[in-house]
Length: 239
Image (cartoon, rainbow, N blue to C red):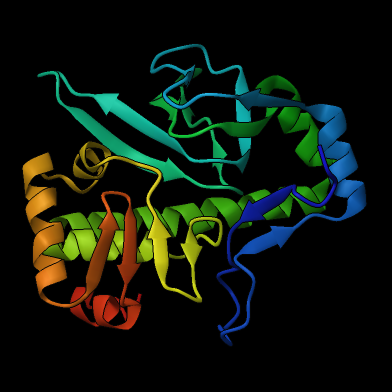
């Protein structure tokens, strides 16, 4: 694995933003070497590959290097709820009482770095600077989870979709900022199961946002966005 691709996606919460911050916590060459020694690089070549399942024994934690992964849970009545999309730089493998709390499935070809959970705790004690980066990442994800709860509880489906598209546009590998074109790695069914809507409701909402001049559908998964208009509509300027 190239030494310059091991990054953790998070922004430190304790310092003010100045508009030029990278969305990644870069690891030094020494830190990357230590992580490579601890873990294993694994590539999943196809989409819809299961990495681990809900209630499997939680033996590993994963750092996503490339690609997109979804975490979902099947509810008692059979409905699927997607609880997270993981992008490059994200850490996955949330566990409770020794088992995974969700199922993780690739949405594209992916490369992950896999760390044994039983060795990771000792490793983080030995490398406090990496431990600090993991802490910053945990706080970053907690902040995003709280924001997601607020979005689900207070915004209409139309505004939820606008906010979701803005979140997707923050990922440089999928958003061409120069041409304002977003490539969605997930289907409308995935989007629906994430924002709490039906697939038909997501399709209608795409049409409404397009009619309102906030996006233009070049294809089902290729969207030209007007990010300023979407941000104002979703009312997320202060997020």
